[in-house]
Image (cartoon, rainbow, N blue to C red; front, side, top):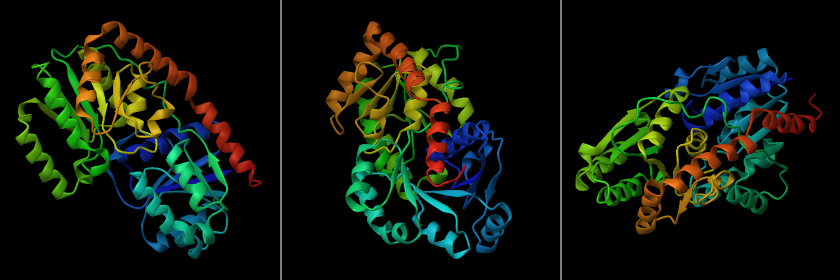
Length: 356
């Protein structure tokens, strides 16, 4: 059994998902390859399966003819499905919905994808995310749906003891774009700093994925709020190093703040919880699968800076609650996410197409 996963670029949550699931599936006897259409920052991450970077028709055609994949999972890029069929692929083609952004953007993309889904696709694969499930049921009622929770590396992502930062840290992970809502992160941090003057800000992002306009707007907002001296920006940190940073944030007495408008899953938040780093997040849909308010993390209403500040301060000042959230959050992740479950569900999906 041989499977190909495709995506635009090796970066962000999809690169993390591909890396984890390929490792898991290969342990279960499923041979996995990954195709990206362009180079990206996460190529530096450690892998033990073939990864191809190719965008030309002849390169992709040669790969398809040489490898004879039993199934191809196309993540997000619905146009690629037509291309793969045109290049001669006649096997099972599954469209995977990940990282489609805000609900409105996801709806528009799915509507645009309908002709391609009808003509070239055998099924859709989605995480248990309410807005995605609702959209596919409504827009594509004929399309068979497989719902498999994303895999999380609960073994590597754990608390790592180290030198404790002198001051508390509020961290943020994402891209400088509207859906990740970086502006709200800065606004919340500005207000919390009034109560915590020694507060530091850590941002983890890939500047190569930010537009010039967003970068300029970010720098202007940072200047306007007077946070320049508080911020440290980390660019392109390898995923396997992130447990060290999440553990440091936890030890500092701070937390990870997720301000996203919509998340299909929210890998950074899940990985932080695994490292016992407390999280405060918008209710961005995908994170509901692992955040239970005041049990494994905290929610605040999108756009409500006042409530976010209250919840953030409680997460920093109420040590009993903070410690219970850290312990319960880690246990929650261990109980619900793991490679064995993903591999079993994925194999059942392939078996339904008589791929054994």
